[in-house]
Amino acid sequence: MLRLDDLTVFVRTADEGSLSAAARTLEMSPALASAALKRLEGTLGLRLFVRTTRRLRLTDEGEHYLLHAREALRQLKEGHDKLVQRKETPGGLLRIAMPSDLGRNTLLYWLDKFQARYPEVHYQISISDRQADMFRQPVDLALRYGRQDDSTMVAMPIAPDNRRALAASPEYLRKHGKPASLADLARHNCLCYVLDEIVHNRWTFYPPEGGVPVTIQVNGNRCADDADLVRRWAVAGQGIVYKSRMDLTEDLRHGRLQMVLPEWLGEPTPLHLVCMHRAQVTPTVLLLRDFLREQYQQL
Image (cartoon, rainbow, N blue to C red; front, side):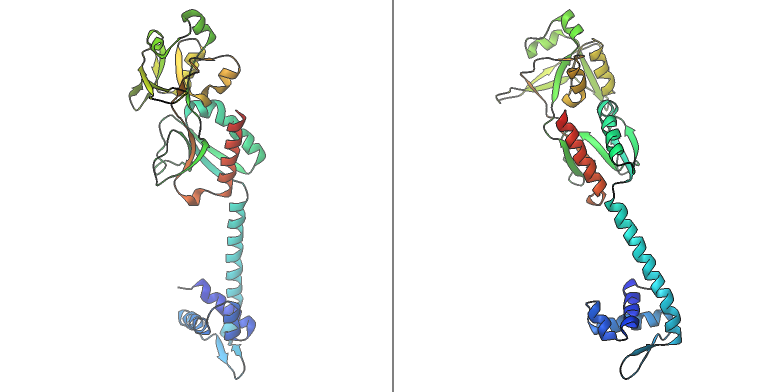
C-alpha cells in the first residue's frame, strides 16, 4: 500500500536532486528518507532514481510517475485544506435534541437568531421531553436540564444557575388565593409532569438563607408527559405549576403567570449543551454555546 510520507520523500528528493537535502527539508534522518524511497520502489516494482557521482537522477519511469505523485499530493492537500476551512468556518448541519417547552417557546427563536448571524448553519431539530439516546438516534447535540453526571459525555453549561419556580395565572390566584406557605400547596390544584411513567408530585424547596430543604407532596386533577402542555394549563388558569424558570420567563414577563412563594428557592435545574465526545466540539458548536449563554444572560 502506498504511504503518503513515502510519496512526499520521493517528490522532495526529485525537487532537491539529493536525498540528504530532502531529508533535511523534511526534518527526518537520511536513513528514514532512504527507507521511504526503497519502500516506494518496492511497492511500485519500479526503479525511480539512478544515483550519479553528485546527485540522484530520475529514471524514465520516475519522470513519468513524478507527475502522478505531485498531483496526488496536491489533491490530498486541497482536500485537507477544505476540511480545515469547513471546520473553522461556522456552518454545516447541527442535529439538536431539546426539551418540549424550552424548545418550542425559547430555543427555536434563539436558533433563528443564530442562523441569521451564521446562514451556513443548518438544523435538524428533535423535540421531546424524553432524553435522546445520542448513540442510537441521529443527534449530535442535546440541550438537557439537570446535572450531567455521565463522564463519557461532554457537557457545556448554558444556564448553570437556573432553578425551578412556582407560578400560577392571575386568574387562578384571584379565584383560589395565593398560598401563604408551602403547606398551603396541599389545598391547591398542582399541575404535575410525568416522565418515564413517573408522576413528579414531590416538589422540593430550599430556604433562601440555607438549611434543610423541604419536600412537599402535591395533588392535582391534571398531569401530562409534555412540559409545554403543563405550562399552558397554568397560563389557562388551571392550577399551580413548578417548572424551570427558563420555561416561565416570557409568561412572567408579560403577566400571564405570577410567581408564587418567591422567597423559597426551587430545585437547581441547570441547562447544558451536551455532545458525545470532544471531536464534536467544533468552532461552530463553540459559537452556538457562547450564543446560547449570551441569550440566557439577557433573560
